[in-house]
Image (tube, rainbow, N blue to C red; front, side, top):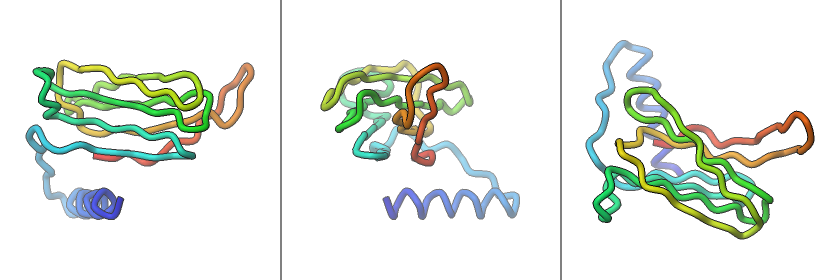
Length: 118
């Protein structure tokens, strides 16, 4: 997590002074954890796919992994059931991910999320 935080600070500082931050090429995995739920993305999964995302619910009833591509489009990947995990392949490189769990249920679900991990 220190590396992720350091990268985020570096990118924020570069953006503040107007230095462009180039998209990184296919690279190692990004991870995020909130309330025991975990998520991961990998732009070089070794299975022939462009990228891959995985989520684990931990002790939560569900988890949502939001992923964002370098073109700024986003998608959500859900896993339901305590202690469950699932993954899916994607057709583009993932820029960053965010892992979320519901903090309440009912008509208006409220989510607790990690910061963006890239």
